[in-house]
Length: 540
Image (cartoon, rainbow, N blue to C red):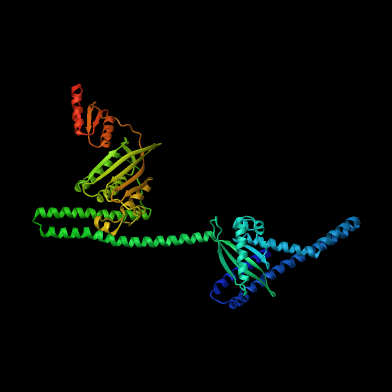
């Protein structure tokens, strides 16, 4: 064990000196390189040689001891039988034969070399002067994926390409008619997604070069780590630029409502006795304050998301109330721009759900507010709710927001959910915003266990689709006591609205029909009266 440990240390010292030499000889000429090699590396090979000689001497000492023991055994055997003595003498002669001991020493050294190679991720190949491989370390299968015997016989596509590349490189170096330079090169075989580095070293003797040592190492992981670090640096730089752009833009966004608040407050103080003017100033201050609060909330939410501090609740809530609160906020915005805003339920939705109603509202309001913002006057915005499927105690709902606004380019659709991203400076200056709304929305959807996607075309509008899971309580929806059964007619020009209203009324135990225009409704009212079963209620 001590000899093995010393050999390991000697090889480690050689490897370390070799690396230091490689660093120190950058830009130096070949004579300086050879001189530094003799001064810095060659002495360590002498130390290694002494260690190997010590190993050999110890082996000889052990052999001598074995010989003495064998001689004593021979003496005792000769006493008992001459035949066994003759056989034992022949065996000792065979064991102590000098040529056999030399072969054993070589095999022992190769064994030690292979043991050493198992601890490193570099394959060693020794070539003779004729560029024929004589030895390949046994770790080739682990490092290169090819057995050493297959490399020696150039068996397999990878082995053929590797050995041909090494031989060609050695031949080119020899044909330069100058001192062999320690150098390295990259190697990558077609069809194998791995990167290798090859280093060439001459075996120097007094008469010149006696052969060459080629070291092959797998650099795939190192190259991948380098690529990852490079990508991380680029992403960090991009994020830094985006944040700088965001800070520049958001400072303007914050100053605008702040200036409005300060200005309106100043006017109100100056016109303190003019009640209509003060009321107008207070209304504008209130609007600007809400806008400023929205900006601050977006920034705080984004900060929480980046620090993984945003949590999602799992509480019971009334689905209809959650949607109504969204509609009550979006409908006035749409009406102010003369935009038609519809909500369509294509399926019957459970009334009581389990989830985060506040975050659901935030997701829908962010998307719907953008739809209203980027839809011109006279356009249309629609919220469609579908029930996709029910699995165990979970219902999956789909929320589709469609508009016929300005739309988005294919390039911007790829980064629309990235933080601080906006379509262009022109659009930002016209419509405002921080570029955080959709990024926050996507993160909220992911935290809620859902998914979000977008389809859009410039000039034709956009369609956002959000799929979210919610728990439900399995409570049956029953009609209120004493309501009774009425015959009801629902009238609206949107079939989705009619169908959803009919679903709700039928759940309440009502006999319900619908019409899609006024003329059809009047006709149905007349027919029901003539038949003696008039409608009790008409929803128009």
